[in-house]
Image (cartoon, rainbow, N blue to C red; front, side, top):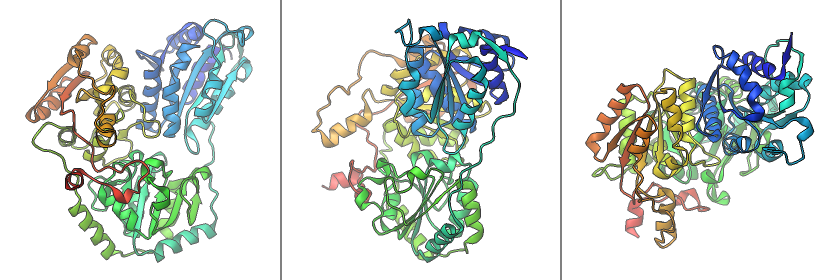
Length: 558
């Protein structure tokens, strides 16, 4: 059948099984929006308050569902407003397809109204991108974009289409989505080396990253931990792969990881990295990271092998399939003495906080209790993000959605909306600091417009908490531009944007506020007032060995 380019865009979205898109219309993308109007019963479009919110919503949808998220924007500032969200997705390997439209082909390169080279701008932060100038290649280009975004190590792909292409017509024929083979570059010899390394180890430690979530390998990881008889730590992106209540689980590793994980990895004789990239926030000082250990690294991306930490054995391939094979080839290990030592570390160095006042750790524990650990938690970036990682017990993957690599303030609210659209039966709660919330709080209007029943928790200490923590510890308490104690009333803001709002100032108010928010079944903001000088512990100074993790007791003892 003969269709316009705009109609081909919609038909290709339907081919890929897309049910929800997030975006904001404008001049160059009007033809696509006109086509969407005619298919509104098949594809749900969420009009966000800002294009950045659309990109984050597509990201949250993708993380929560495992499917490719889609966002739309017009040319110029509409497209550039997607950039932060695309970069966020790129750093955390999230599959999204961003579709933008540009000026007509004859106007390209002439500084036309709202013209920008969005493909050039996003080249460093996408897996691939396209400029479509011919309607006859539009359908195949979109199909390739989805295949690239969702295959291998996932990531964002941008497709920029000139406006005249969306108006021109050509023959369209429906096709099934492209199936891409998973990369498997390891040899049987490499597999045997891995088995030998594991079976020779006396003190193995498993380090789980976001790749385990993306591979859908959580059952294989849990079985692997049982066979190897090893403790398990995770990164921010790996939360939920290992059940947070499992006795083997020792918490997060790295700058704000637990002492048990940091000390245990520093003592182990074999570190097994599963879908992790050894980021600087995990490693600290790379010369002293796990210096007593051999390293086995399993990852789908060959570029990550030996990039930050030298490995002894590496297996490049899909983690779910690699572990399925390893689990059948390994004999059951017994490391009773090592596991007992790790248990002693956990008892000696538990996470702790001041229980006399309202705090974010207490709020997170109450959310965990009231929701029975079944919520999807999104966060922004900073102290609240670390507390959310430390004190909520994630038992399933895809239940903590947060900006790890880029550290994007303002990410969480859009992501929470996207997650709720992708998982409507789940409780979806965004945790934000007051500084982060100011970045994109306009997306509360999106939630109220569509009556999307999310809960926005603001951890309000009237300062930029994480930056202030650094200023306190390392900058002589010079609080340069980190105090936010002004006249902004978040409850009034939320109500003005069509949401319910609850002020929380005492510990005993937390649980009733959460329960009320859940019962209302509409968007609700909880404004939780906490002390301005609460700190996230443990902590490792930037560039220091993770074995030098310290907490409040260590500071007081100095």
